[in-house]
Length: 321
Image (cartoon, rainbow, N blue to C red; front, side, top):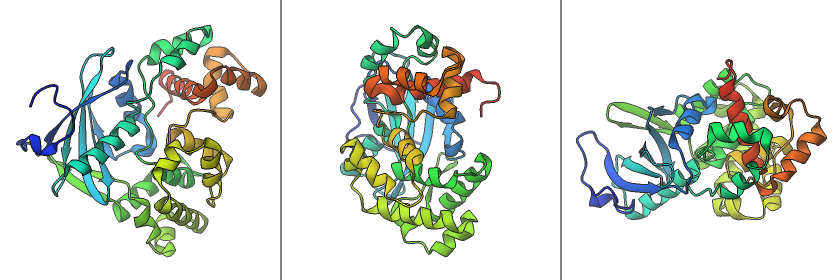
């Protein structure tokens, strides 16, 4: 395969002996450093054990249009003109149209189209933030694979210890999701909302162990199964937030969580205790109004500012998971 063939036509590359199909190159908006993405994914508790990471690659499964598809994304070294190599695998034929949808999902998941230059311009005149920017230069926020998976995690993790919520999420994945085997590894993909919406609530309650959360998850699945994700990604932020908060079990904090981590809507960030702890490492102790004022300086990049603080804090903490 030509090193610079674009990721457009899976039929243009033959199957390799390891089961992967070379699907081309994914450029990223610079600056971009995939090592930061891999470090985050490798330590992101809600995603365990749903992918395989190495020092230079990510292998993960998605369900796209009802079909399980495995992707392997491998880094190239450049940060100023960064590219990722994409390989794909599926048990059925991958059409050009399906590949385009896969590419869109991967690009959105990894934030490859995020242009961080306006954010960095603000950050460079914030001396307290300078160590954070130096640590994470080129980090594009990694989202949940889908906004519905983010919503499900928001519901499952409410007032629940993370290891328990993670086990429940994986049990839902094994029951209602799909798996795909490639190169000797089985990868699991979290179910699409329609699969959860079609399940009896009693089955959800048996897996989750909580009747209230089972009903909340069922309601979220029905809502996400019927919504156009284009509206969620690009519609007016206040309208999307209202839509989210109309879902039982999705309150103000969960709606903000999904807007940022599931949809990349960075216009605002909730000022809460976790952000305050992260910010205190570099800014010192701050009152809520002081933290809010600093966030406002970042304008539409508040979410990115908060994400960088949290990620840098977790990496600097010896107890970070």
